Length: 149
Image 1 (cartoon, rainbow, N blue to C red):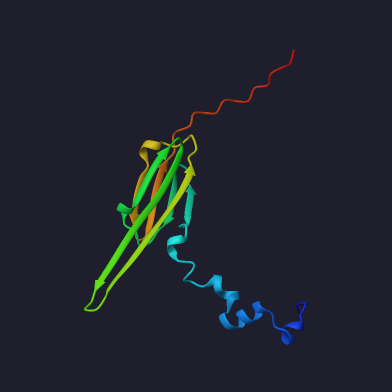
Image 2: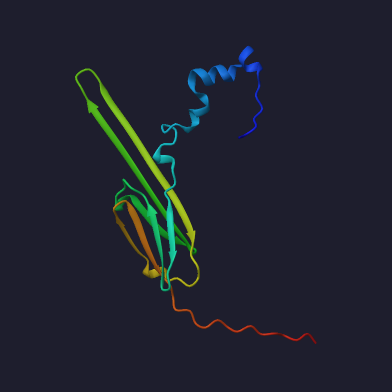
């Protein structure tokens, strides 16, 4: 059981917020789906570190492979997508136009041991899959102790 403080004055003198909550359901106002539209969401990303490569999966349903832009700039992998749709319906007495624009941008720092020239990207079933191969790393130099004179 929880203990909660109750304000009995609300029942006698309801404040403006409680009236609005009762009428509009304002406590749930910002949780509604119409505010959290998909175009404002950043897609989920999975990164798997395998022995010979990195697998990056970006969940981006509803897009086409032409909507994506993948670039590497100064060791940063940039993945972005833009999609613009326009629907126009003309009837006898009116014209209806609907516009939809969605975009996202994700950036990842690449480690030094990746082959930036062999990145492969595929888009299928709403998931963008990138394979980033690792370079063969020479044996790391051993630690050396230096005596102070």
